[in-house]
Length: 177
Image (cartoon, rainbow, N blue to C red; front, side, top):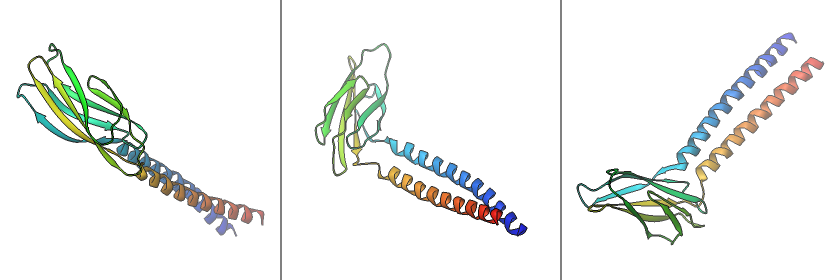
């Protein structure tokens, strides 16, 4: 009987350690998957118009999901002394109402039932030079990857919790006998 109690205590103690370790690993994976899905580099197409023009290094998109706010931010190199004019335009996709603030453009993604692409153009003008870059933003109906991750974690956690409760009940039953 003492041997059974020692085995139960061993499994109970180590099961809780394993449960905590797995929980930590699964949370790290889930958070990593979520952050990766939130940060999406858009497909960039650079169209230089003048060799000495300001440079648009990149345009990033965040939260490109149906009904959510989307912000595009252009990283721009230009001579600090020159006045610069930013001109954003939507080229393709369902029309969205957007607001601009120099190198940023924000809009509410349309509510959609199928994934769509929106194309935007940024033209930067100085007194003598001009540069343009376009970017395509994929608007997805939902973040299914994150939902699958949370479902997976919930199933694993429920299974581990049930196993821990079963071992605890066995331990209490053995101690009571």
